[in-house]
Image 1: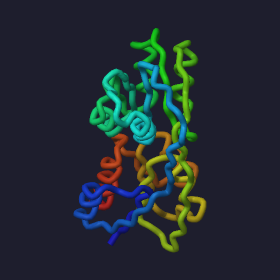
Image 2: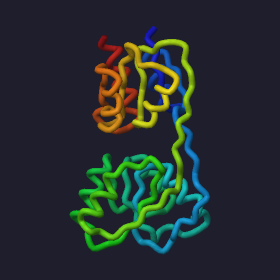
Image 3: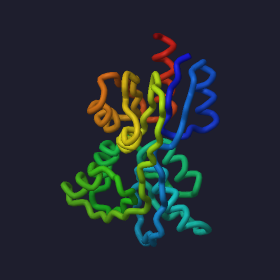
Amino acid sequence: MKTVLSTKMLSLSQKELFLNSGLGLVEYDALKIELLDVKIPLDHSNYIFTSKNAVNAFLKQTDGLDRSGFNAFCVGGKTKALLEDNGLKVMAMHEYASELAKHIVESHKSERFLFLCGNRRRDVIPQALTNNEIGFEEMEVYRTELHPKIFKRDFDGILFFSPSGIQSYLLENTIGSSTLFCIGDTTAAEAKKHSNHIILANKPTVENVLVQAINHYRDA
């Protein structure tokens, strides 16, 4: 039986999708997320979220408040769903930060934004807003820490969901001959430093990474 390592704990439905394929699965969290004890200003109209972690930090602070007056701009369908489920109005959602930045530059140039982010945030959105003289502030509301674990075995495939996840895995392990399944371009770019056996998801979702692995080994 082929066995795949997920560097992120999967939901029950995600695991079922995978295990019904006949593949073996090992999972762990390569990263540890800590929400910071910071006071998020609530006097902004427009908030930018590129992860569910940032949304959770915002929700924690606004628990019990009416959130309908906050406009959200976000990356990813699951981030959008979490925002809408908790009463925020999602003005724009794109699958990639570069697409969201382009939308803001083209359609919201005269507005101001608060970008809620983590300590490992990429420069894509701040750079685009700065280059186009769009007013914004950014605030670090969570931290992503590497959470290494030793595996004394090889895996046929490894599922990676961020460049940080790859860095964490490699602190105690090697890639060997594993095929690497990556959620997006930046993760794949990091993976390419360590392997030529890379398969990129055609949609940046956890489910699509799983489907790529299932299809790869089904066709093998």
